Amino acid sequence: MTKQRWEYRITTERSSLAADGSDGWELVSVCVIGGVETFYMKRPCPSLREEITLSQRDNALAQRDNGLTHDKNALSKQDRVVQSRHGGSAG
Image 1 (tube, helix red, strand yellow):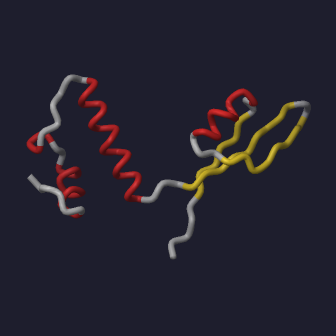
Image 2: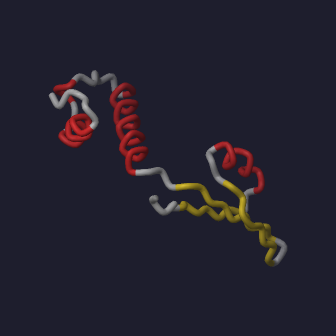
């Protein structure tokens, strides 16, 4: 079993808590020092597989936004390696 990794976030913006919760952040502690509320949050880090998928998604969206097509000849070497490891066309 893989040990869970966590990301941590500290903010003083109470108005951002709902949006942070929607983004997967869990509020774990609140401290008030000098009259200032400080919110401590955590969320699970994405797995390597999720990180690669998110990276590929960001690359595809960036190319779409730049008006580029994303055919197999335009794939980066890293994308081709990832595709070949997961049974896709290596180009």
